[in-house]
Structures are given as structure tokens and as C-alpha cells.
Image (cartoon, rainbow, N blue to C red; front, side, top):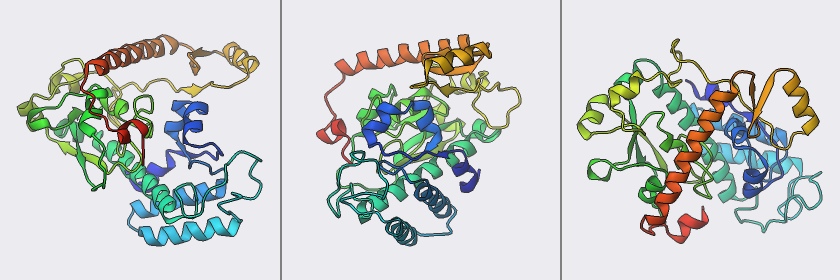
Length: 323
């Protein structure tokens, strides 16, 4: 899976909302499939960021060149830290102090935007490549490792426990590909700085990534699935893990109905669309979706209960999601 193909999987979503507003106002299903930047409702700028991230991932452009290109485009449109972009709805974006992280033209913000999108593009590409037939059987798991140093590193061992993971020999953070722990690790319901993805970087400016783990090593370390499955039992399961596997039935398409007019929802039902907990699925897929949602809710409840008895190892950085 090339960087360009990976980037095409996500559609540009202009929005004036901040990070918290995006989490509160845009369904998780849509966030996972969208390409957006906090407080940026200009589609042309988002399209440029998407293109720059793709070119960086392909090795055709470095960060410095991408930063200059993006800065020039933002300024050309007329953006100012105090006033935002021309045409921004009044009161939608609070004034930013020049040079701070809220200033879209500051080096810190530009680098955060570009590096985050680059990491997401690379992470999704790695995930898809790792799920190809043959590759999955040879390397059925990932290990969470630090790829980039941070001045104040977040406690990823504590996060791993909160996400429902179990460390293996030597405290290594290893889980099988497709294990729900990866989605929990990147879920904003668990961590304020999470990106709502099940692949690296999981959170803003995390510096974390994946290294594949061989089947032989998994067996030696005793790595198991979420329900205690062995590696071979997990691989034998009939679930939509692999890319291109013919016998793996894909789940029915899902569309978020959050905020959609009730009259339109009723019209969709008459056309054969079921709506379950704010998600639209083709008729006949509701029972399967309800089962997945129930299982997910039960798993989250169990993990929430486990947090109460877990050591209070999260720092203020962890709890506040400071970047």
C-alpha cells in the first residue's frame, strides 16, 4: 500500500471546531475516515496538507520544504493569528497569540500538523501492508515501541493497561494484529490526546510506532488474543482482518447519523436502511452491529472497572493530554 493510496482512503473535512469540539460534534466513525485539522475550515488548505503529507511519506519532500509551502499558502489566503482566515464565522475561532501552538503560521503548529498527518499516513499504510495474506501469518503481531524521543514522554505502559493490554516477557507491549487493544489505545474515550485510530501514532506527537513480531516469537513469548486465543487460533478465526482474503466477509458499510434530521432518518428506514445507536447500516446488518456494539461496551466497562484498581501511574501530562 503506497502513501498516495493510503492518503486517498481519507476524505478532506473542513471544520472550524477545536480538538474537543471535533470529538464532541463529529462521530468517531467519521473522524476515523476523515482528513481534518483543528480550526481549519478551508478545504484548499486541507487538500494541500494531504498532498504534502503524501509527498513526505513517499520521500519526495522533506519537512522544511513542506512547512514553507504550507506557510506560504496559509498567508496567501489572508490568515492572521488574531483574525483567522477571511470569512471565518464570527466567534467560531478564538484569536491566537502569534507564535503559539494555536497560531496556524507558527513553526510549532505547522510541524505538528505535518508530522501528525505524515505519521497517520505512514501508520495506516503499515497496518494495511501487515494484513496482507502471507504477511499476517508470518508476522501476526505488533510491538509498540518508541521511535522518537520526547522531552516528557507519556507513560505508555500505563496506557497499555488502561486499553486492556497485557505486557509480555520483560514488559514488552505486544498484541496480535486486529486485537481491540490497538483501537482502545488510540481512542479519545480513554485518552484526551488520542487520534481515534487503531494504528500509530495513536496520539498527538506520541513518538510511538510499531515493529512486527514473528509468529515464532509470539509463540515463544506466549502472546494471546483478547479472549486468550493462541496465535494459530487467532489466525484461523473468520474475521475481516486481511486485505484481499476472499473468505473474510467485510462488515456492512456504516454511516454516522449523529445530528441528522429525524425525518431523513425515517426516510432512510423506508428505503431499507437500519439505524442502530446513531449508525446507519444496510438492512440485515443491524443484528451484527448490535452484537459488536454490545461486545465493545462490555469490554469498555471491564476496562473501566480495572482502571479503578490500577496504580495511579498517569501523570498530569497523561491526564490532560498536553502535547
